[in-house]
Amino acid sequence: MLNVNKVCVAYGRANVLHDVSLHVKKGETVFIVGRNGAGKTTMLKTISGLLKPYKGEMSFKGKNIVGENPENMARMGLRYVAQDKRVFGSLTVHDNIELAAFSTKTDIASAIKKVTDMYPGFAKFMHNRSGGLSGGQREVLLIGRALIGDPELLLIDEPTEGLAAVVINDIFRILKEQVKNNHLSAIIVEQNLSIVSKLADRIYVMREGKIIKEIINTNMDLDVRELEQYL
Image (spheres, rainbow, N blue to C red):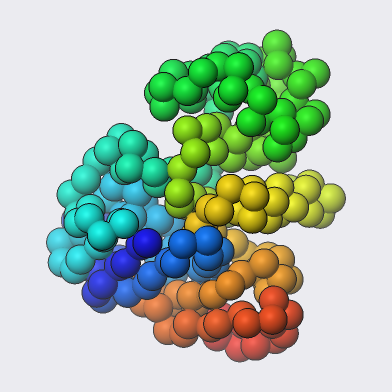
């Protein structure tokens, strides 16, 4: 579904990604792990079209996507959920969902049903300002908005950052259900290695802008210590 081949990205004169190659198959959940500054977020932004590589190849569903803008990538079925948990805070939850529905030409009733089926608790928050939601609720809203329009590949950056353990479990339960039920593929940047070891089909370890290890998680029971040795 997604193929990235020897991609290089720079901020000004500073090289950030160095010959990065990865791939994602249909229905696969891939995690990218690494220390802060390893290049994980830059990788997601590059795939989503927010950054343009100066070298390398990228294709999505067989189509070259180097130089495509984020709007076109979204229309093609690739959605990016950023790390900042930034929703339209002055708007209600309903309005946030309606904007996502409008941009994907989805019926608003269908969009609301998709989000409330995913997270029933939102039914009672529909007319609350989204800026008043907790960090975990904002993350779930962002994921819900990204799912409107039935994308094929989600890119999610640090979904559990700064969240309590019980909320983290909820978010990954939701992600696991959505990937399974909607035949989605996903690339997730995540620091919680115990979650990664249980949910990843495949893991890429990044260090200093390079992928230094690819791990196939065949039985979904990878020993966290195996990951830690590369970080």
